[in-house]
Image (cartoon, rainbow, N blue to C red; front, side, top):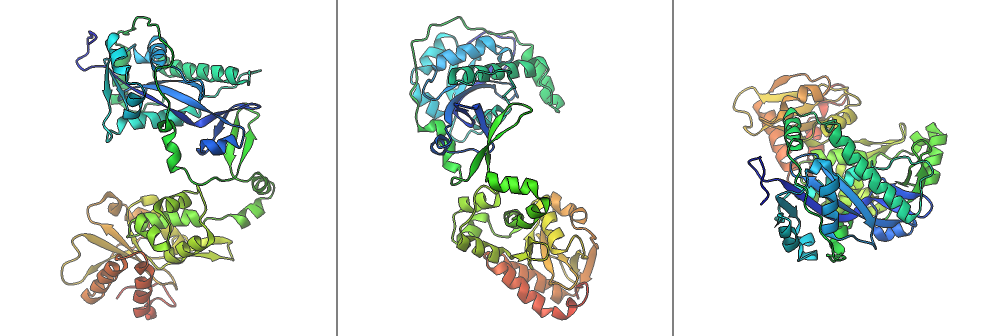
Length: 461
């Protein structure tokens, strides 16, 4: 093992994958995509994939990247030696090089080759999260590498060379600039301690051609992508970049030309569904099963990545109580609901929707006599002329303490009869049994107390 002054060994992550966001186009050069696209679909737009190689200092925001065409891969040893010689922030070779099992299997000789230069190779456990996180961070940051080059060569070789220069410049800029943007004193101190270490530059080594076998693992991220969607090329004249943007170019142009028409065709159902799913008592998987779709299809829809077919979308809107309001040309939360306070922003958005912008008097109810539920606090959303909804907030949770700020016009605590309190608790329990029970139970609850909310702000007994 290399001699060093620090007490713990130096460790690097090494990862290789097909780039999720950067491709080459024969006319536009390097093109970025705003949403990842399957390689097969990218080919329909004339895009050729690239391989991303990266080295990250474990535990620190210091990385180095380079790229090659997918049909011209470079030897692992060659890439690593280049990184350890040229990337100042890596401080030369590490004591431990951590890789995933796919990369180790692709190059069985890596352990022996690294041992020759004093580097120990360790294969990360399948449950380890830090190595995949380093790869994800590199993939995401690669989108911002592109610089504007006057008269840039857009040929395959010229584009790749320019991209690799951009990646090297990006590494140098961040390291020599003290890694600007790090707003954590402890991390800043660790960075400075790391950069103060003497560089361990390995001796030059002759490589004997490609030393690994590419495989499907390079593009394993494709498995989680939604079905193909319309896309179009968008050129930014200011920075010279070309992007493949998700959407329909004709629709986008219409929206830009006519703001009023943009408002009238805006479909916000997925946004509302996302907030409701986040606050629904049942897990997303149960919601998806109830409407006859997969969890992934539900996640794609609420994240805006893919639409649902007409029947599935109607079933989801019915289950979640989402209705179209022709007056405002928007989808709205119809309710009434039993909501669970989990995510502050989602809860606030739903409350604003069902209360018409805070036109309500939400209050926490407690029994006048007897003990309250030891696990949950219950907040009634008392709207004007509409059935009430209930927010269940776990006792002791941070979000529960924030309810007065999240629910506009919060009215504090209201004592109620023990019978009414028990009715609320039992109604919520039944509403939580299955996704379809939520609105059904709350409508039945509202009907039992209809006289209290028809013409005024609903008030508990």
